Length: 117
Image 1: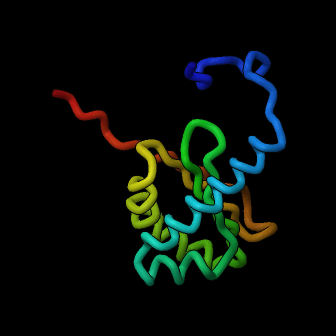
Image 2: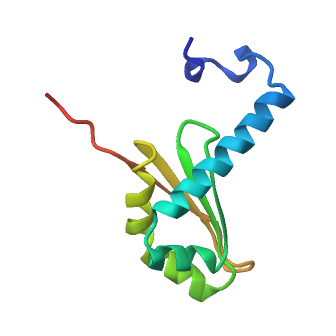
């Protein structure tokens, strides 16, 4: 059964095992995503906080910027980040949280084009 089309109240209840498996999946995807990136992209990611989550309908990279310089570097590396994320899922999101007091978060969605026959 495909649960993506059910309303939240119609889904089966989550269990602690579901939550544990979700965390392990997120940790594994985060690890493999980082390892797939080139050294320069890894260095830019390492300057702040970040993780990958698989909750929802798309893979999402969450980035927490520590200062304006890091925020700017992340914005410059968005095409590179999207390229590496597309190796893991056809629909991906990148959510960037700026430093405190510097505005609101930015979320971008990247989708692979549908190939026609």
